Image 1 (cartoon, each protein chain N blue to C red):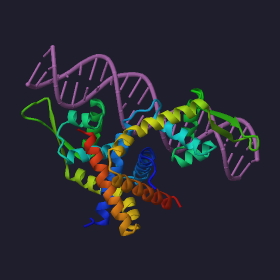
Image 2: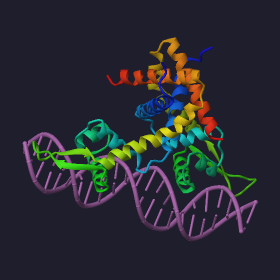
Image 3: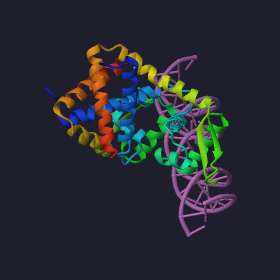
Image 4: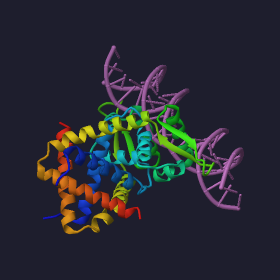
Length: 141
Length: 141
DNA sequence: TATTGTTATACTCTATAACTATA
DNA sequence: TATAGTTATAGAGTATAACAATA
């Protein structure tokens, strides 16, 4: 018998949060919020203002993070010729490498775990992932 | 056809993190790390040292958090008569109420989403939750 | 001596307010 | 006047080191 909807929801929510906490322990070489910025730039975000909005962070916070990323050679900032107030952000090669390494490191724990599952279990996890992504999409409209 | 194990793992990990981020936006009245402590006490954890270990936080950090929780009347600390170095932690009634309110608030978004799923989908999500919890347990041994 | 918990101190990430420079 | 971004400053939350009390 299937539990009540509210129980399923609670247990699922709790499990997702536990997984997140566990995966976060797989330390990357850079802080999590830096990593998030590199990922956003990789997805095509171009300006500091846009980044601050999408990450729900204040403009000064993002400004400081970007300065540190630039200092470490992971991001480059050039003045936008069309609007000289703006600065166009791009990932450097080192930034792209850091992003790839970080992704691999974050996935490592989960890959080991999923590998230990039976094919049937892997199928359940895969289908659940599709459903979760649909729920998240539905919500953002 | 089922994707590669590494793809399933990556997509699942990413989905869990997105769900966590979305659920966190359902603000509780107290900071997330306080909430986590109340939940641990409710599960039967009794001492500050044990809490610090389980939450992967330093002893002084936990000590400070507990002091603030005590100041706000959510937790009470009494000296353990059997080992006078220790202090036994218990949730007050107000703490228990805060915990219940917080849980309801955190679950709210997810309950709405799961309710929108078909019974078959709910079954997949439920089975996935069981698998995820087993993976987390396996790991902590 | 070892352990439980605290205080002292410093670092990181965050925010709001005030600023510079462009538009 | 409004906008993109920065600097100045302060407030959380965290950590390590040093300490007190008890075992």
